[in-house]
Image 1 (cartoon, one colour):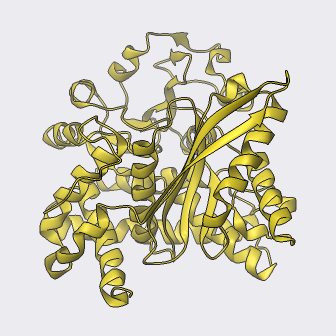
Image 2 (image 1 turned 180 degrees about the vertical axis):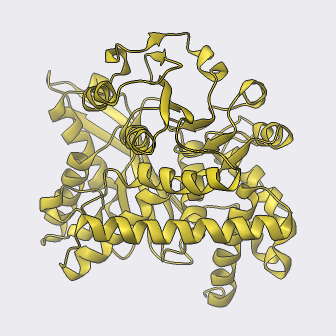
Image 3 (image 1 turned 180 degrees about the horizontal axis):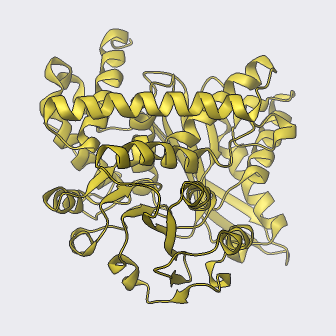
Length: 423
């Protein structure tokens, strides 16, 4: 019987709640390994830290930070750092758990981790952002390292933030340790192809999913929520394959053009991070985004975006989860009833962690690959993993999400069972 974690609020619809519901659905398919299921429901390690910094005006402010190790049975922790004003422990726990599933689903030698700082980066100067990053890194330093836990960029963090983290960690240990983070600038041990990797994974899995349901990409209508690295790279690739980008939404604007938007304008929006600059599309209401006529919907923003009510309204044939946890369990049921195929986050957006793995490997050897090699290796790994998940879904008669969890949880729990308990 599961004992609730005393330090976590459940029943709030958090990412952790969603993850637990997904685990509940997969347990019946785990056979003898189900005896270890409790290890999926408990993070291995949770750290909450105070992050005090001096602001530009000389005042001192305190921010709250988290780093969670969910499961390390298959290798060191892997997971991003996000800086957002709504960050909660429950959110970071859920995201860490999804990283456990994601790395196992694509068979990488990693476990799941995640970090967060509750702050609004829009209210911070570049120097304040650097101070908060460096202080946070110092506070979580006992948990991270190339053989322990390797952070990466996530919401509101980028290669510059990773460079600050790498430098801070390196100064504290007295040597340059490039492999402590991934997603770094290329000249500091970063990997070619990393920035577009997550969006590329969405495209590769999306192409195969579209082929399986008989959807031609040429002329297909695509709606994308979130126009950061993931959404923009996916937009470029789908447009390059002949699809039409008909709707976009960011945290400020929502725009729509049923005839499709010009890629030159999308490129400008991608550089400046604002879709309000797209002149070939008309603004629409935020809720109207979920009603647009499209064939492919790509939620690539934050978790919890598609609830049951929105799922009833979607006109898409295919949902590609570029974000982590964008679809709530009740919405999954609605979409299944309506025959809308969902390619789940733990495989769809795994391109980022796959190339992060490549970066980690390259840092260990100090031997770096070309971008074409990176892309070819990424395509091979993510497509092979997706095909295996599709085969499991067909064999068990379950959704792609449940199949991905079956594949991943079997790997995680087999590692847990074979390693045993110490002491």
